[in-house]
Amino acid sequence: MKPLSALRAEQAAGIEVVFTDIDGTLTDAHGRIPAAVFSAMEQLRDRGLAVVPVTGRPAGWCDMIARTWPVDGVIGENGGFYFRRVVGPQGEDMVRVFAQDAASRESNRRVMNEAAKAILAEHPNAALASDQRYRELDIAIDFCEDVPRLPEQEIHEIMTALTARGCQVKLSNIHVNAWMGSHDKASMCLRYAADCWRWNLAGDDAIRCMFFGDSPNDSPLFGLFPLSVGVANVAEMRDNIPVLPKFIASGAGCAGFLEGVERLLALVEASPSSTASPRLD
Image (cartoon, rainbow, N blue to C red; front, side):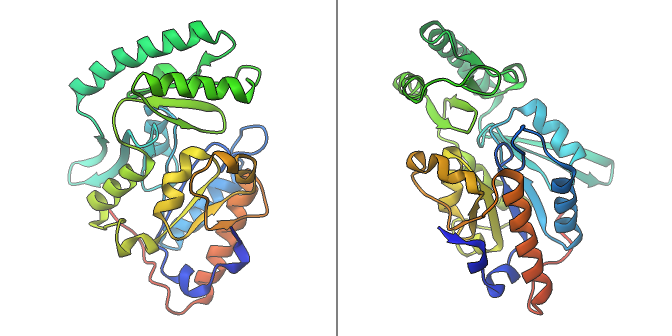
């Protein structure tokens, strides 16, 4: 991983979209998002760069994020959907695109509920995440957000048990997320870019994006985007991250995100060849 100082002006000049994780990336040590983060998002927007959070958080949260944050849209539940507020002839509308149809979501939800019941019976010190009731596609097993942190071995056992039940399993900095289906953060970023901008992120358009993240469930995006940035706390989980980011910030959490945005905007402002322009509806 290279320091952010290694990011070159010609790379920054081509960036039009910033994708970013939320927990552990936009948050401080207390799990809060400071005002400076929203200010940084607004600075990106005002410079013509779109911002798209990509999170494991639930649909209920993501509806609020899409409606109220200074973002182009939001990808939630580890790639289970995207929500995007758009303005059309009839006024504002919320576009909701899911990786699975309604019947599949309902069927898979029953399977996931049974899996969660079995896991919690075997691991009584774990808990369903407090935001579980607002989820559409996955279950989130809390191992440190609202419960005392579980030992690493027990977290691994939970992941193994869910995998054995046929689930796709990803680890964040607070939850074990599990779902039925092949989607992940990267697959929904690909769909978002294709639907909204007619871009192919599996091809040359990936260099038009920067991604910020911190944990194993961000690994698909560290691999997808040539310009991926880990905030400093990514090093704490590096042994569980198959693909590491290309760059690393010196600051942890939101401090690292702010550091990255400051570096990006400074290079963009200094570059006469910047392609960014007011974006994308």
